[in-house]
Length: 127
Image (cartoon, rainbow, N blue to C red):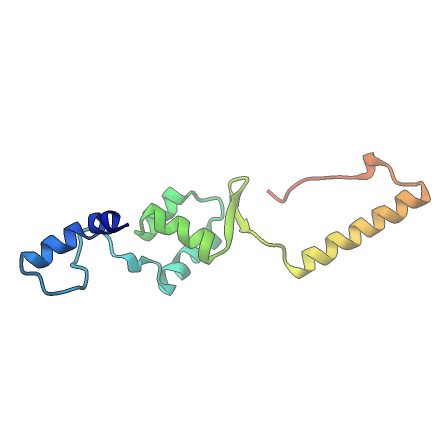
């Protein structure tokens, strides 16, 4: 274990041996980690509302945010995913859940009465 730990801290030991006194990270090049702000989340949400068929690349170009940040905002903060080229919420609303239960109970009653037929079921999406 001692050998493993000494390998992990080898660079740190060298820096402090060379005279470094600070323990905080130094600034690094690239975009800041703070891109996922409430303002940026609101901006991506508004862009999706304006065009739910837009791609992540289009959202990236319009918002000026990185590809990864746009994806992180969509999935983690807006709780959405792409379905048939459109962003939709990952979870059903309470109304949608209640409506599904009502329809299933209605179909079960028809089945028990012997009047339910598979050809009576119509499926589709809203796009």
